[in-house]
Image 1 (tube, rainbow, N blue to C red):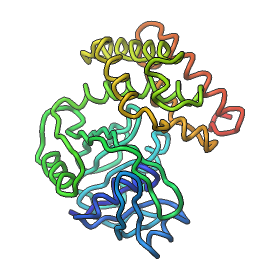
Image 2 (cartoon, rainbow, N blue to C red):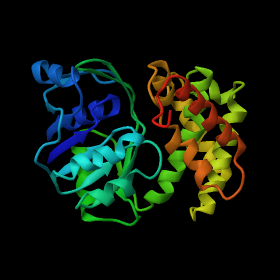
Image 3 (cartoon, one colour):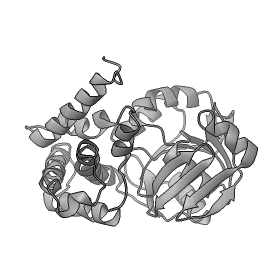
Amino acid sequence: MDICVFGAGSLGSLIGGLLAREHEVVLVGREPHVDRVNAAGLTITGVFEERVVPEAKTAPPARADLAVVTVKAFDTDAAARELSACELGGALSLQNGMGNEAKLAANLGCPVLAGTCTYGARLESPGVVACTGTGEVVLGPREGGSSVLADRVGEAFRSAGIETDSAKDMPDRLWEKLAVNAAINATTALARVPNGALVDGPGCDVARQAARETARAARSAGTDLARSAAVETALEVATATAENTSSMHQDVQDRKRTEIDAINGYVVQQADRPVPVNRTLTELVRAWEHERGLRPDG
C-alpha cells in the first residue's frame, strides 16, 4: 500500500516508521526532520529498536492509496486543504480531539476513516522517534458500520506489526477516547505530572470528574457512554501509561500550542448543562497559551 503520513511529528513518525516495514511510506513533515530522514533513514528507539527508510517530504505526494493524518487538531483545516490536491484512495485520522474527520471529509474527495491510537511516541531529535509504550490502533468508518476500506487499512496496519482492531462503533469509540483525553491531558499539563499521578494522587478527583462530565456530554450528543465506564477507562489508561508524559503535557513543556479546544473545550461546547471541571481546565490552559502568544485570537 502507498501511504502518506501527513504530520510526521512524534506519533506520525512512529506510525509511519512502523508502516514502512511493509509498505511504501512518505512522511510529510518539517525540516530538519525531513532532511535527516532522507539522509539517514528513521531511527525508532524505546520499545522498538530499528531503522527504516521511508521517503520524507515537506508537501504531500501527488497520489497515495491512503493518507494517515496525525497533525494537531488545530491544523486539521490546513492539512485538509493541502491533501485536497492529492489523489487519495482514502484517509484515516489518528488525531486527538473531536471534529477532525468532518473537516477532512468536507475537503477530500475520498472516504474518511476515524481512528484512535494508544501507542506512546516522542520525537527525540531530527530523524529519531522513541516509542514510549505499545498500544493499539482502532479504526473504522467515521459514521459507524463497516467498509472495504476499513478492512483493507486494518490489514495493512496489522501486516506491519501494528496492533489494530477494526470497529463498527467509531462514534462511540471517539467519545470514549475524548473522555480519557479530557481526564488526563489538561490535568497533567497544568500539574506538570506524569499520567500515573492521576491514578490515586491529588489530581485523581479532577480527572474523574472531567471524565464523568464528558460522558454526560456524550449522552447529550446521542452516544451511550456511561459515567462509570468513562472513569474506569481513563484510570486504566493512566495506569497503563503511568510513566508517560501526556501529549498536552509535552506541548506545555515545549511551550507549544495545545489541543485544548478540541478536547476539554469540545466537551464544554457540546454539553447541554454546566461542566465546571472541563470549563476550568479549558480556561486555565487557554490562559497559559494567551500569555505566551500561542493563540491565534491573541
